[in-house]
Image 1: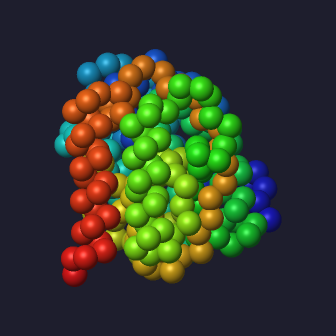
Image 2: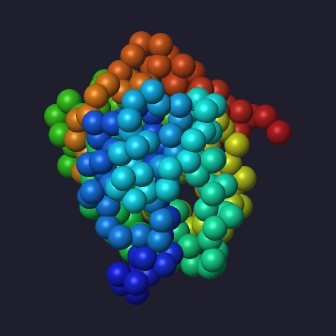
Length: 238
């Protein structure tokens, strides 16, 4: 069973961040106590890194832009510092305050108490604030999840960034994508590796600031292309 001590000892939170000075403090304030919070500054030009450090987070600087690259840098840090890899859990959450950090225990309990390997927070089935997700994000999620169901029988409803996974399972996935294909690569590989997977509904609100992906035309096009390319790559390429 999960208790406060297990949180402190075994849970590592990775937060990729790019110019989130208005929101990163809110995210960190709402997180429950964990072993370590790692904020990966992905080339910010604002004071987000200083704010995160002042809140007690470990701040890493990854100058190569890319959501996946920032996550990979965070994973490398955890791998070097984890003391009990067999029980460690890694949680990913964005730094824009769209997810509710205080809901982290719900995801982790599925792993600690019910022995799941991988838990995705689903915005599609949760309490989503009106306007929190643009149409292009909703459609992209639906299309990606439909294709994963068609090709692998995977019953996903979302590519939500708020997710928890056993550390050892994460290492077994050998994640590679350095940008927009990160979340779907993890989900495809989790199915291919026969992980015990579940989704739980999570709350979702309008983010602070403008999304770097769905909030711009170029970001939407690049993300959509990469997600589809990743799906077809893992389905049809050796």
